[in-house]
Length: 337
Image: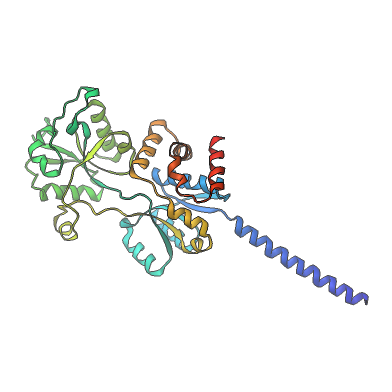
């Protein structure tokens, strides 16, 4: 064979091999690209991120990153594909974005991360049921709904002010503060119940904790999942079922059930069917999340340690999210270490 011909053949082979190497390199980079979670500022999403992240790392052998973002930048990043997973999308709080994202089919909705996220007026369970272990007799044994406060308002009376029962409301900067004031009027309780502004979320939580530890009465607005609801046995008072017409008129009904969804970037969901299946199956209960948040607060644990605690404490929960026994075995072994 002519030397020049042989040289050209060798040259073409080297170029082809080089191109193949480049293709393989970028394929491997794409394959090894980390799964990126939106890490918003509240505790529950950070813990759920790390529960899912541990499973992806140990069970699916994926690299994982957590990127802090405020709500709207995180949502826009999810659309673009800068991030791949939003574990807690409180879509009722940004309906305009959610409706537009659904219309554009920009994200993939895998379903609710917990069945419901209630909010309303709570009282300690010992007020209704008593607590023999603390020698507490029930002060309001028939208290079931908001209208029963007409009969039991004196249990919550603030002796230092107006002679009405006190509702510890959300702080005045919160939209729910004015909603609860409307509710008092709509339920015709304004002669016996008054709104009290605690000043801050931490002060509201401290008021509930302080009353509970002392075994004292308290009526307070709160929501779930939260550490307070995980630590203390509280009862949410019943309200008339949510009605859009009533809500627009005077807020005289329960809050609409909150939709807290896990959302994936659309392209990521399409390219990773095994991960998509995992996120579809991922579901926590309010009770579990409340306990997780209570553990986090009581132990002063960070999100990563709390996630590990959950995985050890609730193996039957996370194993139901995974269909591959080998992956379950790898995760279990990692937890033992």
